[in-house]
Length: 186
Image 1 (cartoon, rainbow, N blue to C red):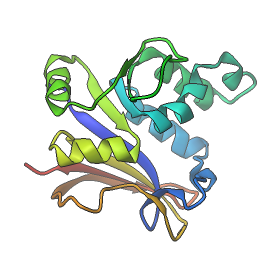
Image 2 (image 1 turned 135 degrees about the horizontal axis):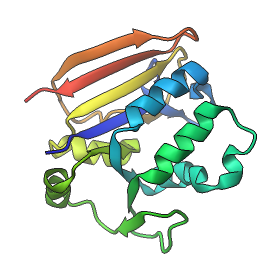
Image 3 (image 1 turned 90 degrees about the vertical axis):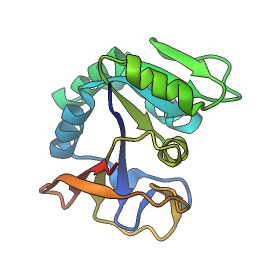
């Protein structure tokens, strides 16, 4: 059975975006991007909420990677090679290949996806991830913590769920970011 992995870049105080929706404070440098690429490489299918898909679909655009460093081109290739499922009640069309729209998040359907998948699944977007966490579907949480406090905004984790975690790995980057990798305890 495949794992469902929630990955996010977060501020030290636990937000993926500040109160104005900005996340520029969390932009990875080459070292962090290279690490993130290796974390994403085994993912066969990404599950996205509508807003996260809107952010990520830029990787489908060939112009996005023109004249960019190898680490950026590598990520674009990784993203384009994966399947995507976008959970949205309003999105009518997708702007990327290998992408389908699902209107409602159904935990049982995700459980079936995990059973049938031959590669791990990633989940992106804190609202969709919160639904999966509450349903007991997430197997791992991978956080890259930026050395910034933003005060408020979109929380990386749900405030209404109690989840026990076991630390798998941690490390630091030259730019002051750290990574934390947890397995959700049984």
